[in-house]
Length: 332
Image 1: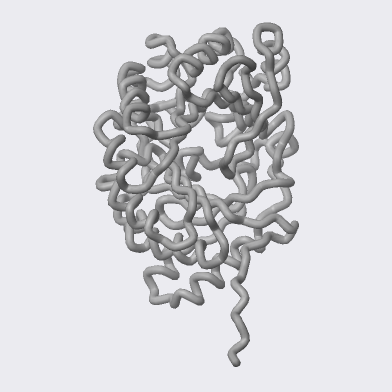
Image 2 (image 1 turned 180 degrees about the vertical axis):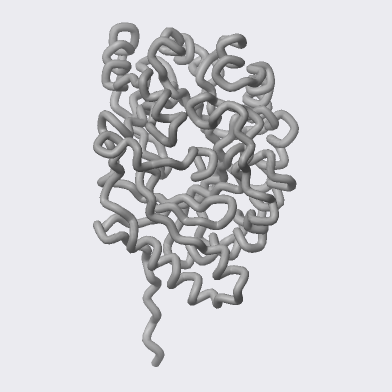
């Protein structure tokens, strides 16, 4: 009688199980958030360097066979990538992938929400730092009305939860905290506050406006009853529920309370580079393997080798010059 084969599970050198991949499908974006991308930046990867949909499916299938269960499609702005619902459908059909989600700035969501929902994406995160049109233009260079239209289309298509990601910056949008809370209560969105991170020169510049989210929680406690809570998902947010409402608020604190000890994720860039940590340089290029005839077993072995390089933690505070990549290149 044949011995039953035991499935390999991705575990890094510190005992953390890696079951979550953030998949960038493009490094391009139609907004220019000043903390993410330098003004006038256009040094994008050529589309020919991007992994094809079939190559992406092959990598995600390998991850799935190694125990990965969550995939988040991101960018840059993922909706720039043509025929994205087709890729979502391919990923949704992979056995073992039980959670397929999307991160977007929502500027193009109005036209694609239903197709993405039909393709198997169940929930999404939308970047939105302000509800003030002039301020939105200052921060991103874009139009707030497009994002709001996309958000309402997502709501109508039945995405739940829709999570609003708000990067808080002192003197820029910290006067909108309560307003964003009320907006999310009104529309049944989840709200997540995020601390600025020193990613590249742009991120280091924005970190001058850094706000410790512990202070934000204390501020909210003066106006709302906060009840410790949880939400399904593979991310690092710590949640509270606003008493008397259905609103959950998440706090993502990479600086004040880093969550490296529970990190369960890696990032795959659009051109096939696997990044093990936002704040470190460890990476592994998968594209050469994919285009030079590697077998599925060789691909899985390469992924295991990459995970073995995952560091214990980022060093944003100790070595702020260490991370020189833009977030749009690494993947959100």
